[in-house]
Image 1: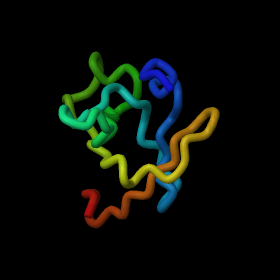
Image 2: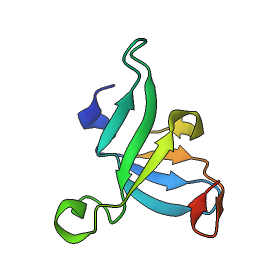
Image 3: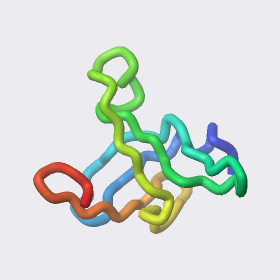
Length: 83
């Protein structure tokens, strides 16, 4: 799968069914080439224009399913922050 295909999928938190946004970037481990995390800007696709630069950094271990239209992740939040 290519990054451009991941960018078209909406990221949904399976714990609370919250829409987090769309994948904007990846963190890749240099030595192994494995994906370490997904970067999802808070505020959706137009975040570069309308938000304050905050983003979700979602560890790849939290990705539960990549479907044809969405990416399901499991992030347990406490007081609005991942734990």
